[in-house]
Length: 74
Image (cartoon, rainbow, N blue to C red; front, side, top):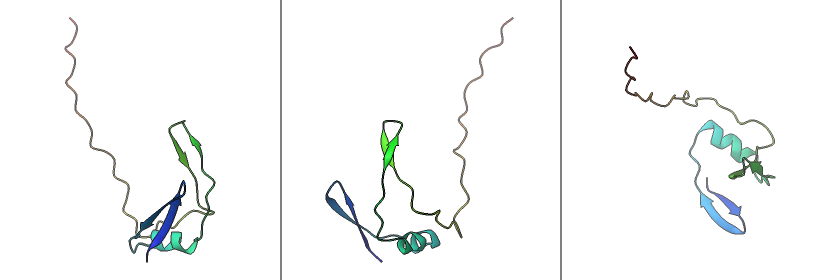
């Protein structure tokens, strides 16, 4: 399945994977989101309902960064 996304008048084609979430998103098309400002750096919009997370991988925490310990004060 291919979908066409129009952003600021520019068309872009996309090929979603065959996941349950991608099929769920496709069931909502056509979709005209109403984006809102997010921290003055980007615009976000939510679909009309939450998408399924069936068979989605578990979230992975980023690897912990190690930092040198500060020397102890006498």
